Image 1 (cartoon, one colour):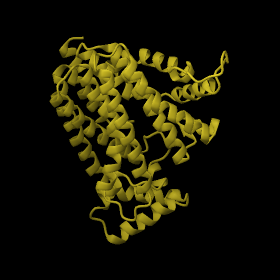
Image 2 (cartoon, rainbow, N blue to C red):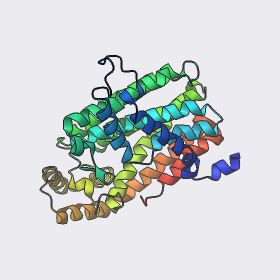
Image 3 (cartoon, helix red, strand yellow):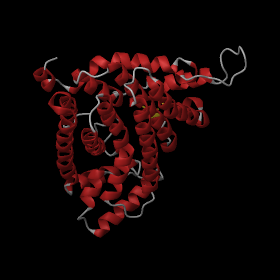
Image 4 (tube, rainbow, N blue to C red):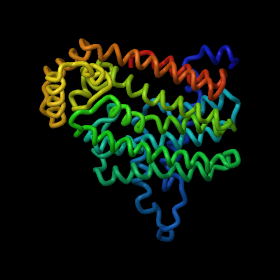
Amino acid sequence: MSDSQLSAATFEALVGPHLPALELRLHALAATAGLGLPQRHTVADQQPLAGAKLLGQMAAHQLRTGGKRLRGGLPMAIVAAAGGPLPAALTLGAALELVHNGTLVHDDVQDNDRLRRGQPTLWTVHGVPQAINAGDGLLVAPLAMLVRDPAMPPGAGAELTALLAEAIVETIRGQVADIALRDHPHPGLDDLVAVHLAKTAPLFGVCLQGAAVLLGLDAAAQAQAQVCARALGLAFQVRDDLLDLGGVKGRGSAGADLREGKWTAPVLLASRDAAAGDVERLRRDLARATAGELDDAHVAEWVQWTHDRGGVTAARVWLQQLLDEAESAGDGAFGPTAGAVVTALAQRLRRLDG
């Protein structure tokens, strides 16, 4: 693909060619004992190894729920556009997808969600204790994958392993903060931004800085990759909040987040200059929603209130600013050719149609 074709291509067109190989790698890992890692402490000649079959079945169940494979496909597309080592990028992409799915397994348990992408969540099929075990395995196995892969350029495996370990802990910190935010008496926009950044930006940071590492880019380029990840991570969350208020998030009618008692960016933007009485009533209703006591009429009222107070408009403006920042930083990190992958992703995120 020429530079001009690359710059005009959609994100789906740039990532799509890499997804079949990514799917094969993911499902091959789920089909092997211990997610592809050595199993040293076993009973001699025991087939199948104790626990290994069920662990693989649970990993396969989670992976079958699908998803866009964004975190796996993004570094592969960037490395391919720059002519870098695609086999190593495939391992990085698979590692990121396993970690992402591990966080989703744990999120579903903590949020008591029974469906993930229209399919039963892992804990509803295998129980909470085993789902936690499967999530733990999906979080940890990728670290060994990265450090041991012979396809990695010299030193890259250790560097990527450290980056991913840091990102996992930061994502966990974000989940801790997210749960704590539900009990915050008067959260502000900065509180929500801190949660969003910690929950979403770290894995994007590994996607982008990891691609830079595989391409042998310098520290300045890697720093720009993290700036891009920060903007993209926050943009994904703001966009997700907007999709929810528009009723195109795939979770039923508009306001599913409000129905679950969650503060969102448009709601907090709308409440900045609202009357104190309105904000207090909103806080009480969100507390009622957390307890499952908020009816559809009140949800619809707060959705309309958020629109009327300018929260949706302000969030749309903010989203565009974040995506502008991501495009600029992506170009700064990878140059115009590989940076076109980030630009294509930003252009896709500017659409608010799901």
